Amino acid sequence: MKHNCLLSLFKNFIREENLFNSDNRILLAISGGIDSAVLLQLFLQIPSEIAIAHCNFKLRADESDADEAFISELAQKFKVPFFSVSFDTKKIAKERKISIQMAARDMRYQWLEDIRKAKGFDFVATAHHMDDSIETLLLNLTNGCGIRGLHGIVAKNEETKIIRPLIFATKQEIVEYAQKNNISFREDSSNKSVKYSRNLIRQRIVPILKSINPSLEQSFAQNFKHFRETETLFNYAVEKLSNEILEKVNDDELLKIDLTKWQNIPAKETVLFEMIYPYGFNNSQVTEILKQADSTESAVYESSTHVLFRNYKKLILKEKALDQLEEILLLKEAVEGQISVNIGSVALLKFEFQNSEGLDIKKIADTAAYFDAEELQYPLSLRYYRSGDYFEPYGMSGQRKKLSSFFKDEKIPQNNRFKMPLLLSNDKIIWVIGHRTSETFKVKPDTKNIVKISFMSSLNHE
Image (cartoon, rainbow, N blue to C red; front, top):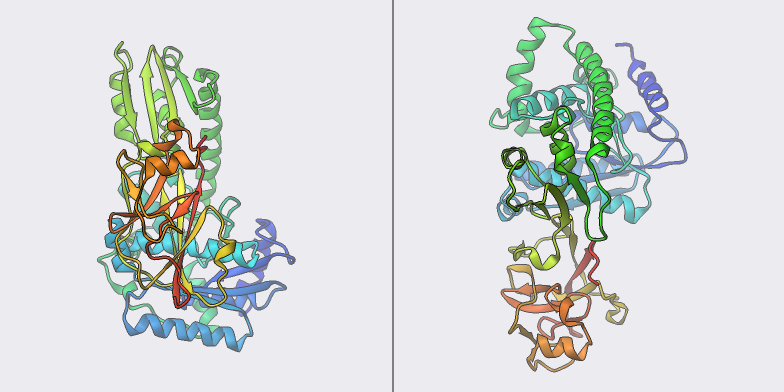
């Protein structure tokens, strides 16, 4: 590749894919590796307002801190705004019972989105390239996927505001550009380990495929184009068939499927899966519904956030009420910075650990609460009102009060009380969310560090 060839291709790709314009502000996700180092250098050569964002996952001891220091120096050198955050990734992965890779990915994208919104950026740019897209496809095929798992990594996601301006480039092209332009970067030692599935595919599987087809990247670029067009046709057909079997819904219903009409459409298992998959249902549940489709008995199928009822030849989808959800562990111990926890699709809790200097507790919204971070006890959990609950309302000097009495005083209707979310600290109620905090762990004049907890719900509690 010639000296400036990648830069020209980069500019052309941004224009052809309409990734962004010169007025947009772009937040660059920079890890310090060769891919993101090249991404930064390319952005520095086009008219754009940028900033650097870096996540330190604390997974490689001193190496992780050295990566952060390296990127901070780059930001200073090029006079680019710099944002960073640290996560105790192993602990958080253990608490959430997910893999370290999944925990890191979730926290990274959530934090990037938080920064993007807070600082007014239009898009987040990552350094994914063609080789990443190929590895993703092979990983999806290996683990099992539908047609949506074949299209590779997309260049732009309007919903998440993620752009990938290097997705057209191969790893080799990026390496050559870095070498010819003397671009400094950091090597991630974990990339050499084959204990991770993606690394195994990268180091063992892809070289074998390239021995069969030396032009593997070019072939897959064409494959991705065909797969995306096929997916467009697939989605069109699914929507058309779905409309044939859907009925008008009542206020509390999301979908109502006529099973008598459903029996007559082609690929009915696939169509049903595509209709209910976005609500957390899986293949095995679809198979079970198929087996029982002719039954005259009622049945209930549940995902973590939704309920699907079958009766009288109808499938009716509803969202679970908050009081139907089980108690949820939020944080096992304190963390640094901020972290968001999704409660399925129905709510989000955000924890922000910060200094109390300048805090005006009189301006706290009903959906946010502050506590003394050094006094707060763990674990923190979320559940919903149960008969016999009591707490120590703020302003009552530690006196206990039954929640039933509190609800009566607050004029909260009986039918709404069991839908009331409660925040617990070590099994003790410290916040009736949307109403009042407890006297326990309140912010005092000598409090130095606080935790701000915000609750955002997508449900209607009326």
